[in-house]
Length: 107
Image (tube, rainbow, N blue to C red):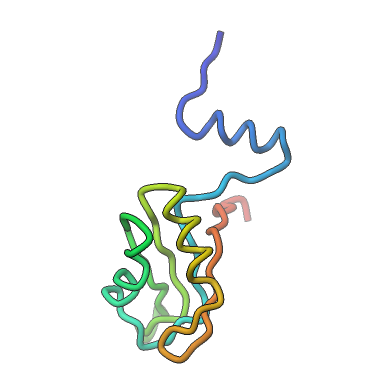
């Protein structure tokens, strides 16, 4: 009998059921271009243990592009952050927060 470890079993179950498992990583858009990594982490840390924050930057200028990712240590923390922060105003800007989609490296 073959056993699946980790998220393989969960991934299989979600494909069979036609649903997608909620990720531990969230996507945040419409951030101020002046947001720092430290500020970004501090804003999202009340919802759980943050493992990593990434502000996406322009390759040429190094300036933030206005969106980023927060990775939590648990799915529950990520869900809580999405529910609490989606549609909030941060630094004068309405932000959108959702579960990050898995990268499709085929294209």
